[in-house]
Amino acid sequence: MRNTPISSLVTVGAAVVLAATLTPATASATSGTVAEDPMRPYTQQTLRWGHCDEHTPAAFQCATVKVPLDYGNPDGEKLDVVVNRLKASSAQQRRGVLLFNPGGPGASGLGLPVAMEPVIPQEVKDRYDLVGFDPRGIGQSSPVSCGLTPDELNIDRPYHAETFAKDVRWARTVADKCAAAEGDKLRHITTRNTARDMDLIRTVLGEKRISYYGGSYGTYLGAVYLQMFPQRADRFVLDSAVDPTQYGRGTFQQMAQATEPAFTRWSEWTAGRDTTYHLGRTPAEVRNTFWDIVARADRKPVDTGDGPLTGDDIRAVRDIFFTERKAADWIAELKKAAEDDKPAAPAPAPELPPENELAGLWAVMCGDTAASWPRDPGQYRRDTVRGRARYPLYGDFAYGIKPCAFWKPGAEAPTTVDNDVQALILQNEWDSQTPLTAAQGMHRSLRGSRMITVLGGEGHGVYGRGSCADESATRYLTTGKLPGGDLTCQAPTAR
Image (tube, rainbow, N blue to C red; front, side):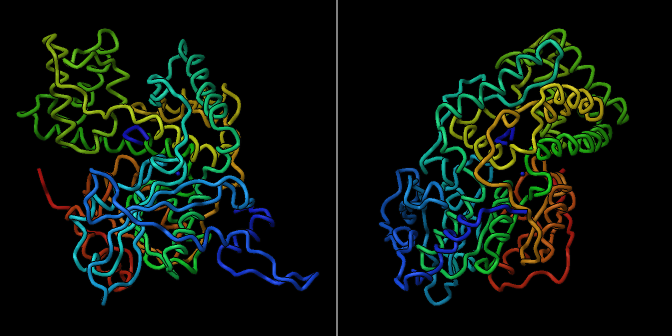
């Protein structure tokens, strides 16, 4: 998404081929001969582990797994999926593989185990090989590219009647450019196929089951794997979860919905510190101050010293309101700059993501959910007007038209996540990207899961950050014991 940064109808033929990834060659019912297993070249491949690159610690090794572009046609085009691995510290205590995915969709996964290794408890590293991978089409794994320009990489597009036609052209252009650049390949860059790749990685590594840590969209990928391969799932930790029933257009809309209570919370916190920030002595005064700054910036952009900010630019940084002190510091700077006509601090917004990351985002999300996006641009106009009225900060950004409106659907319908497989869900109360309501939706879909909510917790990502959820997550990974019920605990006070 912005700082980035969601019932299966598999054909009979595809289901038979998929089953072949796990079964040996079978006898032909008509001839009695042994049929060649079309997946054997994949399941029997030997990985060649070697040095990764100069940015990866030497203890990690990398290899390339060959996967079929289309699991329904294993003899067709092949893709490379690059994996890395840090072996378990203890041969005696080793349980298996802990596979990682950081989310997106569109984010490279090779860096996550490297980044998390220092904060993962030793008892976890004793038991698991830490394995990362770039999902198909992403990073080093046969990356897709649409040839998008910098302007086409910007997905934060506010609604204005006079620019709506331009936004429609943007969405259509991105979809058309991706289709022209990648063709039929896009139909197979999907979550279901990435889950199949995960299972093929499991097979090639010689594991009967895999454990998993997924964050953000990676929770949806993990949930799809649990739905498709429940008997091969060991211990799954889903951190900062996507609501599988809302994945797609609803993922953006949930961001807008969650921003309003975060904004209210911020205004209450800031009002109690008026002697520091001078933004208002009551929550209402603080909110009025903010909207006055936005209105001023719409009339005359605020100079940040790193480029001007319009009111729309300020609203687009909606995720800052989930971190109270950070938001108050920035808005106070903007107020001073607007009043004194002097440069303010630059907006705390990330740079535009790499082209492959955005191409991967649209390829996966649109390929998964294209059929559920309205095709009529007028529907987006109406929805966006209503969205902004209901969610003033970010509603028009979230409800607006996206390339998925013009995308060709993927090779399969999306997965309905509905099972009782065990998993552990971790969630901060004030997560800006996957709000608490989204994690609660995941919890309802995974009936065998337990959920730990960090009350007052801020930020996107829980495990390894020193919160009260760490102990339960580590216990689950090392012993397999889920909490007896859902838990809530309080985040440390850092104000």
